[in-house]
Each structure stands twice: as C-alpha cells, then as structure tokens.
Amino acid sequence: MGPKQSISTAKELMTKHEVRHLPVLDGARPVGLVSARDVAVVEGLAGADPRALAVEDVMTQVPYVAGPDAPLDEVCREMARHKYGSALVVQNQKCAGIFTTVDACQALADLLYGRLAG
Image 1 (tube, helix red, strand yellow):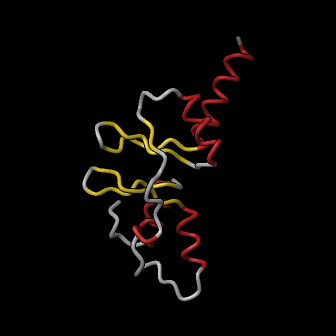
Image 2 (cartoon, rainbow, N blue to C red):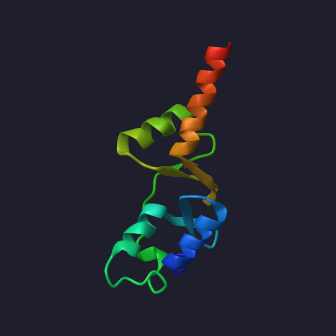
Image 3 (spheres, rainbow, N blue to C red):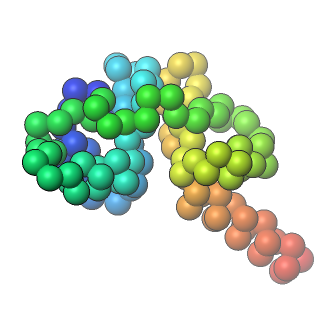
C-alpha cells in the first residue's frame, strides 16, 4: 500500500485479506506500517474522514524491522520488550512480509506441541 492511499483503502485491504497490519511502501521500499488500530483511531475521531486522510498521516514511520533470517527468539523478545504488534520483514531493502504476534503465538504453540508430543 502506498503512503498517499486513503485510510478507507487500508481498511478495505485489511478486510479483504483478513489482516491487521499492512506495510506502507514507496515503490518496493518500506516506509512505514499501518495497523487496524491506526484505522480505528481515525474512524473514532469526530469530523475525521477516512476517505480524505492518507495512510502516511497515521502510519508508524519507524516500524520494527527484522531480516528473514533473524533468530525467532530475538524477534519475539524485542517485540515483547517494546510491545510491538508486528515486525516488518525486510530483505534487500524490500518488504518480504510481516511477522505478527499471532505468528509468534503459532510458533510457540508449534514448539510446545513438539516438546509435549515428543
């Protein structure tokens, strides 16, 4: 999603793809992150028009970034320490994905299942 796109467009994309976070890209280069919480805050403001406000007005401009080979424990520790809901996964200055708290919970569940079943 581009930084000039509207908040309402971000909400539509999140709904369509059933996600709560979107990378904000300038071409292929990540410049921020917008969350469902960001969208909800705008929608809750009296007089705010989500169709007229741009994503760049509400995005996190310096999101937590991790490489695709970053150790999972370090990424999770950093997310917990700072209460981040997600991390942009960036490789070669391009967004490769988003790692969320849901992904972290799934990884923990897989680890625990493996230990308990083994």
